[in-house]
Amino acid sequence: MSDCLFCKIVAGQIPATKVREDEHTVAFRDINAQAPTHVLVIPKRHVPAFGALTAEDGPLLAHMANAVNAVAEAEGVAGTGFRVVCNNGAHAGQTVDHMHWHVLGGRNLGWPPG
Image 1 (cartoon, rainbow, N blue to C red):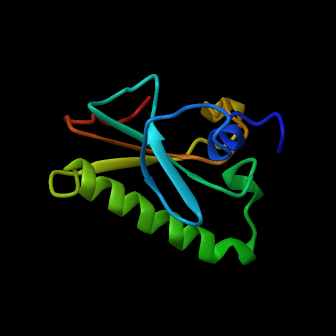
Image 2 (image 1 turned 90 degrees about the vertical axis):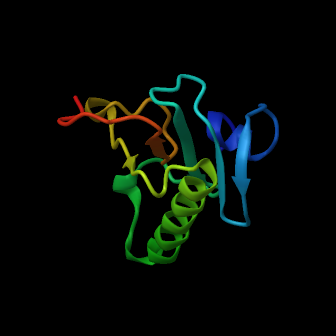
Image 3 (image 1 turned 60 degrees about the vertical axis):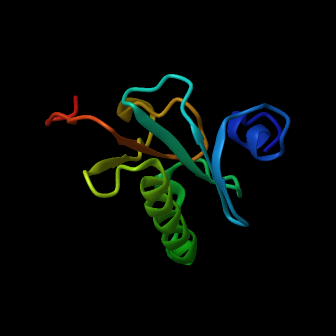
């Protein structure tokens, strides 16, 4: 999508501090980090929100889960624990209309989250 911030990052039109990339996903540091480790994992294909996924997107979800686990391992939070957050819609706090998962860790993450 031509006006999507994350699609522009995928296309290399906007710089990002990438920590992982493969044929289906890109992972990069959040510019407004909420924890010592705060990485966004996004699909390269434009998906506007988690709620837009269909049954056919099962392989994409599995690939994203593998990417999250690889990021957690590389960032050193896999053993101590990390949180995966996916905001869906404005009331949930989604500010970019491109599905993305926040990988947060590196400190004690309180509950409830907010």
